Amino acid sequence: MEKIIALIRKHWDVIAYLVFGVLTTAVNYLVYLPVYNLLGLSAAVSNMIAWVVAVAFAFVTNKPFVFRSHDWSAKVVLPELTKFVGCRLASGVMETVILLITVDLLGWNGNLWKIITSVLVVVLNYFASKLLVFRKK
Image (tube, rainbow, N blue to C red):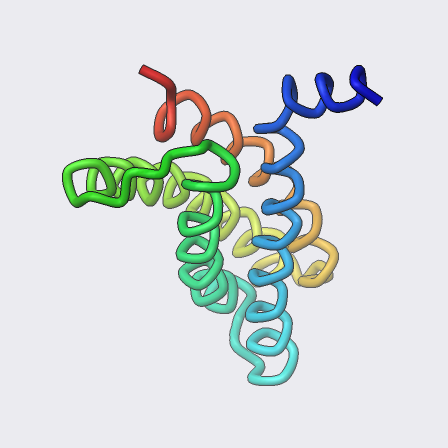
């Protein structure tokens, strides 16, 4: 049991990121799917709307629970938030461009391509957050 606890502690940031990554992805899909499928907006526009909601959720959960950054003072939060949104903006633009090309222009399945791009985005966002946003001093 001690070895399991030690292993969890050693890899906490990856485990927590996966848990909150799944939750962030769920938030993203809970917005994207109805906007795309029910409102009939394009995949790119639907993705942009879902992105805003998911990024807000991700910051509020990743900061304390994944990267253990507990200082919510403006001098700490503002730089973290700026870097976080900047990194997420880069991956969000990449995801939106992929969806624009594959779904809106080529007519491929919007639900399937949302899943495919999500995998790439989760990996990129983890490394960006770990290396650029919430890095240890």
